[in-house]
Image (cartoon, rainbow, N blue to C red):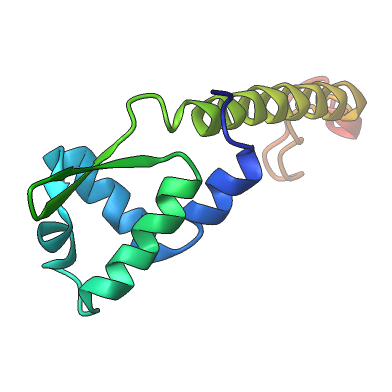
Length: 128
């Protein structure tokens, strides 16, 4: 099975309830649908719809045991997102480093300013 498109992963994670579900599953491990729904102020059917979106994106998997349904995060599900973020971080760090180097090269070196005429320093402008 190929990895789901990055767009599907980001779309699934765009919703704060789905992100909270993923965070809860990462912290607690496998949970029943009822346990997942417990801290939310929405119905179990609404949680099931959120879980369906997460499942289609490849982020979670479900299993049935008698009348209970259990859900867990797929172990490598977030790897494409992590990889994309790492690439973006490297790109922008390098771009900002280059920008900083250009700005430093084009900025003239500034000498310390000369003091006021009342406290002259030798070899400083016209005071010397």
